[in-house]
Image (cartoon, rainbow, N blue to C red; front, side, top):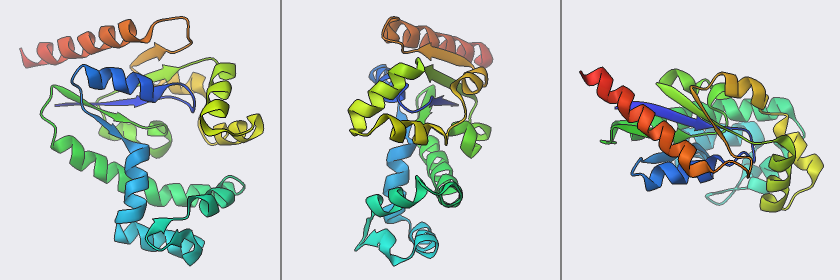
Length: 199
């Protein structure tokens, strides 16, 4: 089975694109959702997070997201250390999930595929891009945060231009070009490449 990744900067619309692939019968592993689950269910990861941030990092068995966010969005070193704990656990979990799939290909949706080194576990990567002003607007609307807060979050991701150059396929989600035809074209290209390899 071919392992594909889907990535893009914050506000690019990765989740919308992933849903279209999912509607075509392609299973999608969401790395953000998985990371949140693992931070509350993986004993070794929980222990490491407590060592890094103290017991205040958890409220009972729930991750104290506000407390951690308050630290990592101000301290790049702490964010790097947190990512060094969470990314390997999520990559392992994603690998285990991929082994359970039986479709011609499956997708891993993650904002930080290249930043985390997860691309080494994937056969192809699909990028989702959108103009910066649109991405900022979308995140401000979605997360009810200020423009400055969005820009701070963007600082932790490699630039969209570089990211898209590293991808095998790129989907433009700029509110002008329709997303579904772009997804269908890529879906067909992947299925054709899988069929060609089997010959």
